[in-house]
View 1: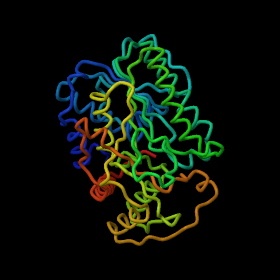
View 2: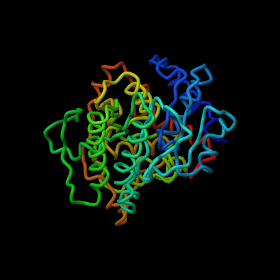
View 3: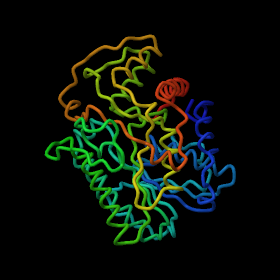
View 4: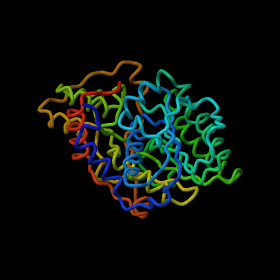
Length: 356
């Protein structure tokens, strides 16, 4: 059974598709998104295609590196001409004479987990900068009405004790002279590149800053701590904690991350960045591990990470985001951390046909 056979998953898709948003902005329009088979992108594709059932008539261009993977993931829409999958590596120029005006472009592609940061640091940086520039150039060439760049809570770096929550004006601290800095620094540079295109090319741009997102669309290859916890939980195994677990972070269930993205895309002010976060999903890592262990009747055990894993871990010990700016646009999350984790595990246990 795949995700489309999960009643709970389809409830989530229909929930977002049914939100009171300015959907008319997308009526009979086209959207192109990179990272279409990722955690956020694949859920967004499902929402848009579900909305098409209700008459949105939005053409979706989904970019990704693996067509076979996409064919499996989006099998429900195999015969729907409104979903066009295009095999593409964002680090290469994207020149398409067969595509006319594209109304919205969303750059969601990125290396997003620790082992990738450690084993492919060049690809991590180039996807976030060169890949972004390729998408920006495409947007300018194809007369895009609005561009969205998926940024990250990691741009804030380390909390040095001066604030409890990071708001959008917080500058943060990142030691750029490290291997691990490639991800946050390239996201920072990406935001600056967006501002340059806004000023120099007149491109309308918004910047959603995602926190640590999770959900049933996660890839089984994901090496983030929470993803590893969830995989252990699905397998009915003890939860392995590879630190003291005192890191205090914001998290967001994919449903609420994507509803936040859509709110920013449709209602956000041009040139502005918005945190997608709400404090009821803030939690320490050790408490997160305990929740998942309790759901499955298992224990939390400690294990020392290997050198590759350790080199990819964030050095931030506290990264809580202030989401009031986005909430002022009308966004409100549906799930807090406990219910989001429970739902993720229930859906993934229900759907056993995973894409590795």
